[in-house]
Image (cartoon, rainbow, N blue to C red; front, top):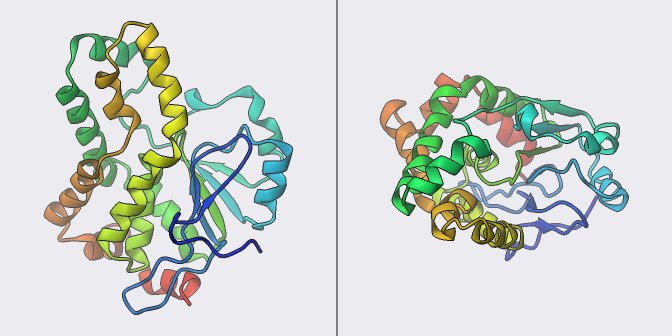
Length: 253
């Protein structure tokens, strides 16, 4: 098994061709135990992984790689990765992030409208996609070693991480800090996108709220859970029907 995560970097793992892959190992639970390293990985799309990346991921002995992307986000060149892992698709299709939809919004909008788009995006997660996030947490109930991801590893993966870390009784401050790490690990890719946006004569400040994460985004989803479902504990146990004690038994030491 690979080394325990460096808590200062929250378990970031470097790869050749994939980004924002992080190990949840090392985070402290409420009872003083910690998440076992090497069992729970979150990330951006690993489908374009190099041969060396695939070999590194195989060392984790992953039972499942769970993909929250839609079909439109996938690429024909991902076959090498698909043949190497138990790669399961369970799409979370919040809103419409196609270029055709976003370009008119960006051309006529404002940074505040872009942020509102993201806030609405996050508030939909706990309401509209309970089935997908229940299935995700059921893998944790089953004690699976897994990598779960979307395209950039920040929004759908960020909300899934908030649920999983909550189930493991990690405090909310640490959960939000983990969420915000995507900005650092996606910085280079985001800079490339913003450079292209500038060439297309779109104001970078209009698209930046869509490329980055802000505490307000994840807090919007968590606040909805607190208000509509009587808090995270009730949401996990009663709405999603998750055995949090089993998950804690599986991953905490």
